[in-house]
Length: 293
Length: 341
Image 1 (cartoon, rainbow over the protein chains, first blue to last red):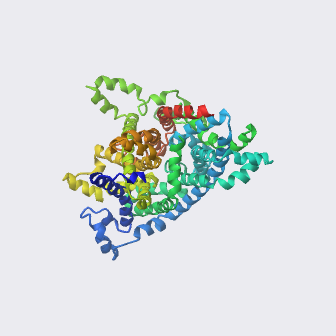
Image 2 (tube, rainbow over the protein chains, first blue to last red):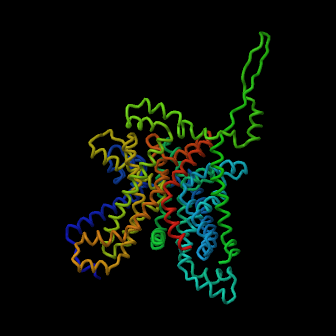
Image 3 (cartoon, rainbow over the protein chains, first blue to last red):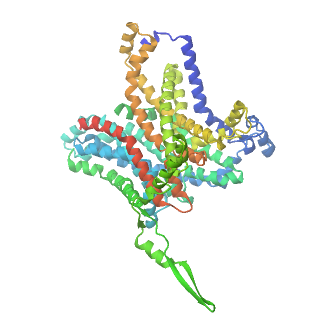
């Protein structure tokens, strides 16, 4: 490789390594620290006396007899019924991803293949919708949802999240379909397929890499959403993120902030696995927009 | 593609966006022009053995009937936009006259809820965006110089701050800078001030929110720059080297021009994202020190009494703000795609 011909000066190399180490600490340390702390009692994780208590687990040993405790986890999952929120999150994510991808592949395919000007305007409007903060729409939803009596239910949240997801899904899939050669489906149509048959038998088998990447991002949007789900789900149907936010209000007074810490770790764990397994797709998805404009 | 085929393919997602994005926008605009009905007051005359007294009471029936009749409320025009909680047009004039100077005027302006939110949102947007770009670039260069074998794990950990739920990421940081947390303790030791608390100090809170903002979005800039660095033309680099370009000259004249289009992309995406800053304010419990436009909407909607009209007016103002920020993107897309289409 040509780039290896030129050796970096020692000083530059040291600076680069230093930056890397600092950045790794900044990016990863908070998560490991919180994971470690979630197995302690509040007196240790938030220690006014001595910060090393959280490492040695002094209070934890005094209160529970062991340096590690799962009190926070049992408190959150069993006592505060965090399992319900986890189940709601699972449902919301599953349906949001499936429905957004179904609508998005159909629309994205059509937008990639149409040569008319209205397809461009459609994409431009979708771009405007995408840029708007979702919370600005909420005051438009509420009166209608109250009137129809559909406020607070999971299906309502799912439909709203699907709609908010659409502009992004359309843009992403549109650029993926643009990369699938047009000759592929056109030759199928020359052979007598209708447009839908060509889509069904020729495009669907080759579109999965793009669909999986887009699906990951729809999943993240549904999983991470706070603004919309906090406003349109009632207490029984809360998903994990609004549930954690509501912990903060109630547990601070009861001295059970460790429940929130345990819930935060529980919510982060699936994301960890997701990034680990799909790192390549996430990177390609993040850069797809940049390359395509 | 034929018109009819296009129509049927696009229909489901068009309907979804029409019903749940377009109509709500219309509804928000309409709502922001109406305000809730005032209660109907009637005068009741109570006549007793010692004469008659007049008392006012709320006519529940009439109020309910009025609300039923016009569920939107009474038409208020631009009244809500002009009130103290939004543009405060009536308050600004006197404020200007009372102020001793520009600084004093801005300080007083920041006591009005809308300008307080606007002030923080804009400061956040225009401080965090450039810092994100700089940090992202530096990290990308550093990762690119690392051995190929460890780049995978490096990218994995770099992605974490961005992919983790914003509410959760900011909570994790908040617990660490808590006066009893590890960073809070470190800060107190560094500043040699045992009473130092991020929670209690407006300036520190602003800094902390922005630190979170950069921490959260630097990975995005990093990934885009890193991908860009992979596609730098090695032939051009080699040619530059043969012509005697120094390391800095190679970066200045080959790498940076290659990454420039990516920078505009990152900047525009970040401007839009940072403008909607919201979750960290909830997590940090920072509303006493800093509010944002999104937070103001959330606060209006979530309180004991839902102030729909007030939230709607703030929403419209936010959308206008986004539209102004977005106009360069729209023009760019129009030029790029408009020619091709």
